[in-house]
Length: 470
Image (cartoon, rainbow, N blue to C red; front, side, top):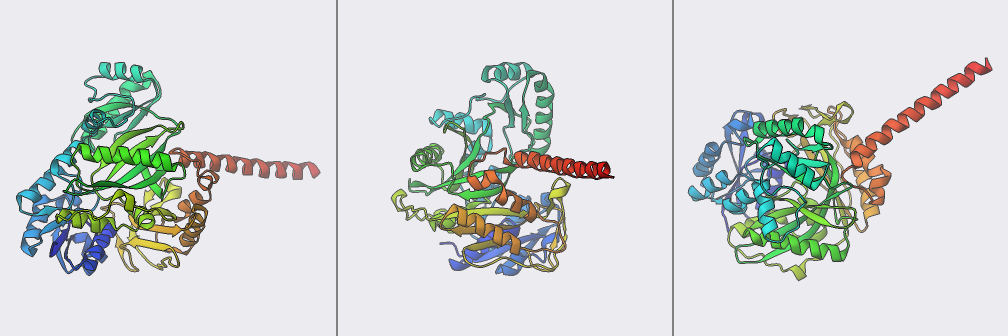
């Protein structure tokens, strides 16, 4: 087992990894930018090293700075968390060349799954179901039109590299294709340094379901069930839950078997997530594989009792999983809400600043993964995630009630946060029924507009009645 691990990340995930290491008796090294010098992960780690100025390109994304910090502190391994360099094959390779263990899969597995077009091709060859579309990136507008006509509109333009919804475009008709392709390629080039785009059939009224897999270097691969990730805004997840209210026991086994097959196809090692789209007829299709720990991993931990971060570390140190598929048991229901420093009433604009009047939720079945504290200044350089609020209960209805209570308790007086919006999601009829898809947020927007119009019409009617009586 490792004696010392450097965490190449910041925020709540860095804190999460530090806590797991401490329980395992492993020393930790925190790295931080000049903007993060007072952060919680810096305070909790055994050692801390400044790796550069605030911009992530000069700090958290600097391979040279990270490897230098690891060498000077004599760390044996590097845990990348999520985001930043967690899915960067060149960084994983650089760690290996520096005689450091990268806590994650092999560089080749990261490369294969990091390019979505390659991932589609690999999964297709392995017999994993993929959405109708192109196997290779489109080479021209002419080939794009031919492919789009073949699969049928609407289609989705999807960059081969990157993630987070950047560069993705839904094209509803032929006349929109040319401009959408230009925009998608331009954004993909700017965001990921690669303009390759491929075409997929848009699966309407779909749910976003992901399967958690764990694999070691001894040929063992298991799945830990699914997570429902359909509550999204601009292809970015806001709420996750496990298990999914749409998945039956039979479907779980089938989807889990496919996820395990996908991991085996690339000789995967560590914790990973195979993501699927589930259509209204119960058919599911592979969309991508995330070769890292996920933001939403706590809901899986809650219902299985498996600590995924500790599992990552043990696998990377060469240990076998120590758990078989038959040992995985699912208990109760868990929901996670991502609380961001954003203003929901102002198109979710970022709301950085100093945290004042902080009150954190607690009580039975409540878990809070966060790095914030009273007096902490939320920087504008990084992702706006403040905390992940996770609840667990025996049933889904109880979990929703618990989340509503916990959201009410969560108070930050000085910043705009997404807490009020998340409360609306918990109260939405479609969410409470479990019969929702990736269009839930848009449906909620339309419902709000309708309610406002009805309220305006009611007030106008009352004024006219009052005028008539006069």
